[in-house]
Amino acid sequence: MNPLRLLGRDVAIDLGAASTQIYVKGKGIVLNEPSVVTRSLATGKVVAVGADPAPKGETLTVRPVSGGLPYDGDLTRHMLRHFLKKAHGHPFARPCMVIALPSDPTGIIGDALSNMAYDIEARRVYLVHHGMAAAMGAGLPVKEATGNMVIDIGCDTTRIAVVSCGAVVAARSLPVGGGDVTKALVALVRREHGLVITEAAAEDAKRRKPLEVPAVDPYTGERRTVTISAELVSMATKTPAERIARAAADMVEGLSPDLALDIADRGAVLTGGGSLLRGLGKRLRQELGIPVQRAERPVESVALGLGRCVDDLRRIPGRLVIRP
Ligand SMILES: Nc1ncnc2c1ncn2[C@@H]1O[C@H](COP(=O)(O)OP(=O)(O)OP(=O)(O)O)[C@@H](O)[C@H]1O
Ligand SMILES: [Mg+2]
Image (cartoon, rainbow, N blue to C red):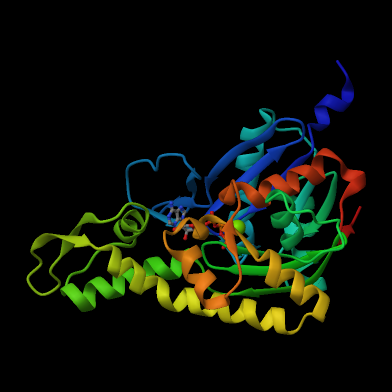
């Protein structure tokens, strides 16, 4: 057997607040699971990770990732080890890892991510700018001398970037995403209908509407149902969409005239799960006054872009940090 096989194939990891995707070199995306870890309240031990069903007993499920960074380092490492083992099938893999570096990179963020990757047995770590990965995964011509705007709407973060000539020329992230629409929907149901629904129910309603979801009358404790109308979802989307549009417009204003013209012509491409929200693209188009379209595989764009880097480590465009 080739001893190099023990090192395992190289991987790309899109570490998201809502879900983690792993791309294995030459294979494509082999894992897409919720970024969650469940602990037993009695023992404190981790009892389930990702899509694993939580066992019986009192447990607490947490999301260890926020803003593309480990919010809880121990739990994130535990989760990623579990995912990598699953993706690779054997525990001794020491792959090269390509990871997205969230926008507004500082040395600290790059250090935190690469240290984490070395802790989980990376042989070498490559950090690729998140905006570059999203643009590549969305199929934009990132190496051409034209401006490409990509807006990745995640769970708790939206990242806006302009890529041109193989480099990220402007990038910004803002703490708003699909999760804010969900929270706004819970608050609106409480205000408009006087009923309490769970975030899981609101999440469901966002995806399929109009939808009847279980609710509780907070005063009587009576179980009810409530129909979430398209209007309510649209109301919940308003503020997040306005914030994203304002940030994108500010970014265009700060660009050179040539690049700003490119963006006005070519518009912006949306990636991330948040871009699947119905009506959001139209709303952004109206607010920004430029063409806005969704990438072909929006939820997978970042992992696919990182995957293209992992398939050919020598040709990673844009910012790249290697820490052996
Ligand atoms: N079909 C859908 N309709 C509406 N919203 C959706 C749909 N599918 C996913 N979402 C939303 O997409 C968001 C998650 O997107 P994504 O998987 O890109 O996030 P993430 O990469 O894990 O998070 P982040 O990039 O913020 O770290 C959630 O808020 C979810 O509600
Ligand atoms: Mg993401």
